[in-house]
Image: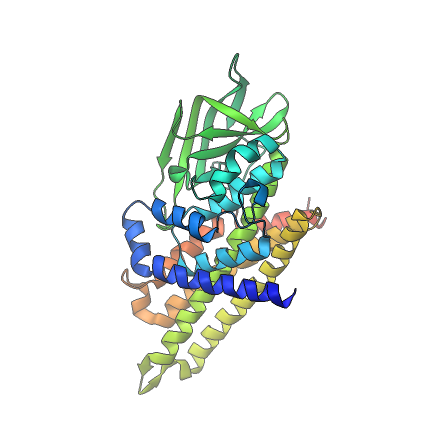
Amino acid sequence: MSDDAAAERRELRDTARRFLAERSSEQDVRRLMDGPGHDPALWELMGRDLGWQGLAIPDAHGGAGYGWDELVIVFEEMGRALLGAPFLATVALAAGALLESGDVEAQARYLPDLAAGRVVATLAAAGDDGLPDLEAVGVRATRAAQDGWRLTGRVPFVLDGQHAALVLLPARTPDGVTLFAVDVPGAGVEVTALETLDLTRGLAVVRVDDTPARQVGRSGDGARIVGRALEFGSVALAAEQTGGAARCLDMAVGYARTREQFGRPIGSFQAVKHICADIFVAVEAARSALFEATRQANRHVAGAAAELSAAAHLAQAICSESFVHAATANIQVHGGIGFTWEHPAHLYFRRARSSEILLGTPAHHRREYARLLGLAA
């Protein structure tokens, strides 16, 4: 990496951290938790003035044409700040699926609005158990006489579905699973928000009933497109988790240095030192796994995708567990105050627990990793 590229990435991280400190403070996070869960004005500002939604979208479609190295930096900083915005759903999942589809018409139709922050989008691919399940797709597509395709079915646990104006859904066709785009609101579309543990992240059930839809990509190619988009989402989520874990480490160490007991900082006690050291090890493990997943995501964009699946599964398994450990230990360092609603430690714990299962549990990702290595059936 050249010195200029390294300097640009440092500047991007500094800018993101300053901006999110101002616009996603604890007070802002709690305000969105108690209200809409998403600030459309902030979303438009990020797209128009900062260009974050379009960082990894080609300039031909209104983006900046950067790669995953830059995008991961933004996801990390958003994870540190617990930003309540549909960035993962729109940028990693939906835009990732559109780019992977190779559908030039769909890319020209949708990507410019996503890059500019004018539209929120998501990908609906979860099964009833919350895991991605492309073998049990719950939506059926039928040919309409005059206007393309109609979709009927239900998808649970759709990330930020209640905020999305564009939903990408895999559906069953005679040619196999195919990806479709549905506008929201639209005929026959019903979106129901779910009550969640993590109040900073929205989930919804999306139902379609004879709903007009546009095909995205080739017929029968939906499983491959969605599978790759979920891998992009796993890399992005791993970055969020790494940022959140790093913030928990900062909180724990900061409190251990200033909180006194028996006339000395609690960080001087061996037991507390061990807890903070364990958090540090977890954060470094997450960073290592994220580094490899980011490298493989960049290689896929350049035309080599052989190792992306393995790296994405491994990063999700490690980063999920690292974030949960860091958030749990952070509460322990803070003692009784860490369990109170007024303290932010529980917000990171909730985000860690919800992220741990959002795109599959660590056990799921380890099974997939072992299968890819030929170690399991």
